[in-house]
Length: 186
Image 1 (cartoon, rainbow, N blue to C red):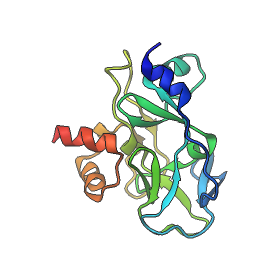
Image 2 (cartoon, rainbow, N blue to C red):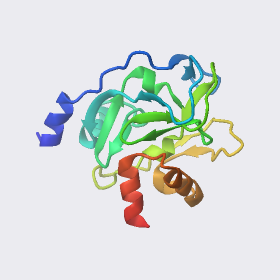
Image 3 (cartoon, one colour):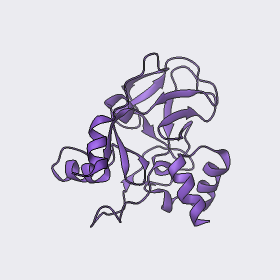
Image 4 (cartoon, one colour):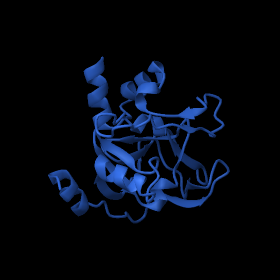
């Protein structure tokens, strides 16, 4: 067992109290996270929490049917947070009102009104893992966000239109590991 795998079993993100959203039925799909008060632009909504696992552990769980490959949040090249259900419930939008920064911090991109559903762009959080997962197919799923800018498909960072990538990077609303990889490519 590798060091990363041993460490992944120890490291957990604990649930926060007082987060400004509740999980309830979403008109988009399944459940969603809805603001329980006005959330101001730039305000932290929550830390996306759960068990930290390696890509190898994710693959093992996925192949055993214990995990959907789309649920864990990638937080580094080969590290994921197997998120608690309340964080998995936060839906995707191609026109998000929130984004994940640093490692796992969800922040408001604009003021979010009481009762409004909270969304982030899943494609802005996932970098390909081909080198760690033989036979890995690009992470893809249909998008049902309904935004006028809907791309119809949710996939990895590399497939985002360049202008969308640039908007996230220029706005400083992208995870640290994505920013590092992006900077190395440009």
